[in-house]
Length: 496
Image (cartoon, rainbow, N blue to C red; front, side):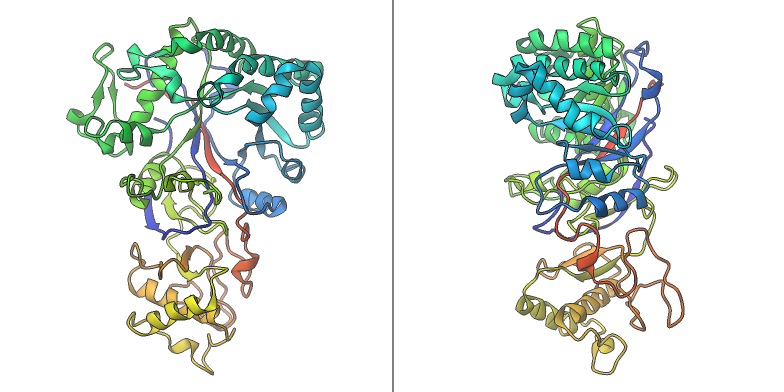
């Protein structure tokens, strides 16, 4: 599989204001249907982020700056936010915009409404903003089946409006589906689409074939594992190395599957093949693994999320307003201030993520924590925790700023570094977080910093702010991001 293999490093403690996300890839069959004629422009893999709307606040200029700093050139919006589209102009960042489910009725019932939507959300920004596709609704067939009859009419009306604007060759139109529209997904060679939805899927696939658009699928090995405990090994879901005896084998094709996602992908291709479609690429619009869960989700852990994501792709953001279960708000890689939930090593995979190979992490106090709680954590760090707090005493180099948050950040980081940045050593009952931003300032040098003294310039990570700036000014610090998912589009090569 030509998605870069990644090892991971330091995990992060949980937070109540995180940014939801899941991965999104664009893969071709791993081997069952190598004759699939995928369009040439779809052959190059890429990684990006989905940006949702379940957020505390939105800072489009800062978001765009962050994306550019991190070399992220592909994103998907869960809507068509005008401020974001405006901020993305002339950035060369390629954008997929979305029609929310609650707009399907209007667009699917009226060509004029569809034309107006295209004019307002596409023509008004293109080509300054590089809109590449429109995702229409989300899991409509399984979540709002009453809207199913409107799905294809909405897609066709939007496409016709693109034709009228002469944008139909530049901008594709499709709709994301849940994996549950497929039946008997293992072995993949026996998969097929649920016959309940054939009246929608058959004409939809013909449309996708005719227009060169992808089949969008949300594929989660996490849910496969949760629903098949004792049958599907955890390692198969996490892309962990397997012995041949543990690989899943399709008895009909004798193809070996080293992970669940590949099998799900081939199931989608087989399902299309059964409807005589072999020239449509699969775009996995969502995949991932939650970093925490409730007591019914014991495998939703930071370590498993780190393993899955590191072995597949790169960066996600967690939404901070998602409902339970806990795992629903814990699919991401970044907290609301862009500090990582856990860090990935993705060296050798190109320019994506400018700070992706850093080993430099620090532990600092979170924003918005009440002073009394923070003081208690500070007292523990400097007392029972035996952190070196000498530098925050009066007259010492890190005494200023003379406030609880500043002193707590130094003490937390001192403890974190002396513990070897071990998992769980940056928590302090939920008031601390890991950051790749060096908190050193002026003559105050935090333990673990690359800065070694006065006059020596800090080696700055791509997500750092200037020395002396507080974390309240850092990117997305007000909990901006809804759901920045990694978007990976890649055409998979044959198995063996």
